[in-house]
Length: 295
Ligand code: NAD
Image (cartoon, rainbow, N blue to C red):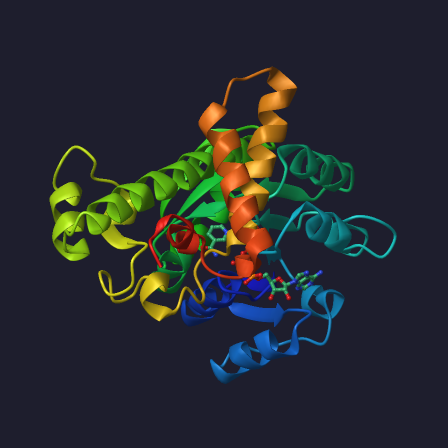
C-alpha cells in the first residue's frame, strides 16, 4: 500500500484517483472545486482540505490539472508542493502541459531530491474510468519503475518516451493527430449524411474500410452511434474543445521552436478556436461536427 496525494479530480483525475483507491492505496484527494471533492468523497475516497494537507506524509503525488500554469502554480514557489515534500518523494504529473514547463518542474524537483515524471495520458474519460489509459512517460527510467505499479492500476499501456518532457512531446503529437482526424471524420460523415446516407451505416462502412480510426471505433461525433461517447450525452464530459485547443496550441509552439511544418495541425487549431469562440469551448471536442453539419 502506497500513501498517495491525488490533486485535480476533474473528468480524468476523479476516476483515476478512484482506481488507485480501489486498488487498496491510501489516497488523499484534493481539488479546488468543491463539487469535485464531493464526488470523490461519495465514491469513498478520503478528501483533504488543501493540496498541502493531501501531501502530508505522501510517498507519491499524482496531479491531473488543466494546463501548464496550474501545474507550475501547484509545484513551484515558496508555497508550492515541491518546497514541502520530503526528499525521495515521487511526483507523477499526468496533466497535458508544455514540455518546457514539465522540464522546469522536473529540474526544481531534482534539486530537492524529488523524482518527477511527466506522464500525460491518452484514452479519454472512458479509459480513465476503465483503468485502460495509455501513459506516455518522460523522466528517469528508475523513477518510472517506481511509478509502474501505480500506473498499471490506472492504465493498460505504459511507454517510456525518453527524458524529462518527452512524455509531453509524445502527447501533443498524438493529440494533434486526434484533433485533425476528428475534423476529417466529421467532414466525411456530414458529407455522407447531406447526400442522404444513414450516419450509422456510413460510420460502420468507414470503420471497416481504409478510413477506419479511433473516432469511428469508439468516439463517433454524431449522437446515437456510440451509446457511451460524449456525442450521445449532449457532448458533456469527455475532452473539452478548449482542452483540445490548448493541446493544438502547444503543438504549434513546439513546431515553431523546431521549424516543423504542421499545416493541418495549424488549420485544426483555428477550426477548434472558431468553435470555441462560437460558445462551445466546454463541449466535448467531437461537437466540432456541428460546424460542418447542415442545421
Ligand atoms: P477538468 O477540467 O475536468 O479537471 C481539472 C480539475 O483540476 C478541475 O476539477 C479543477 O478544479 C482542478 N484544478 C485546477 N487547478 C487546481 C489546483 N491548483 N489544485 C487542485 N485542483 C485544481 O480536466 P480533465 O478533462 O480532467 O483534464 C485534465 C488534464 O488531462 C488536462 O491537461 C487535459 O488536457 C488532459 N487530458 C484530458 C483528457 C480527457 O478526455 N478529458 C484526455 C487526456 C488528457
